[in-house]
Image (cartoon, rainbow, N blue to C red):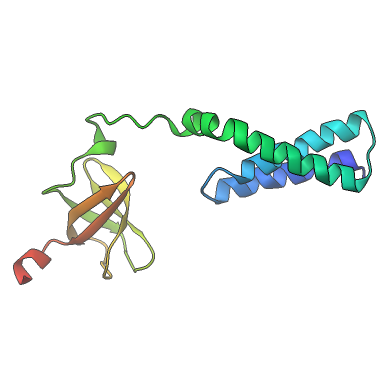
Length: 149
């Protein structure tokens, strides 16, 4: 198998893995692999040089482009009065996917579906209070918990 094709396929694998993992870092290893594929297509190099170029290209693209590309793909962090920034104080929602700590579930509130976490298991259909919101993750507790205190 040609090194050019191999590096190109490695880049595609990195891009596919990025879709499965949060953080937007693996993407830059894919760019590094494609840079090596381009260089090796133009000028054949030994494996040690290919690995050095891969590492350098991956780190340079990560350091130079990550912040800019995150803002492009994820958008800015403006706080506007929309469903993504609903004030959680005195809000309630309904669990749409079981929460089994430490795993997250989903809750519908403010007209949208949110990732939700709780300190105790909560089943689907339970009405919950929104305790706090951190970006697109909300912390919830059962609504009937207020009366028990």
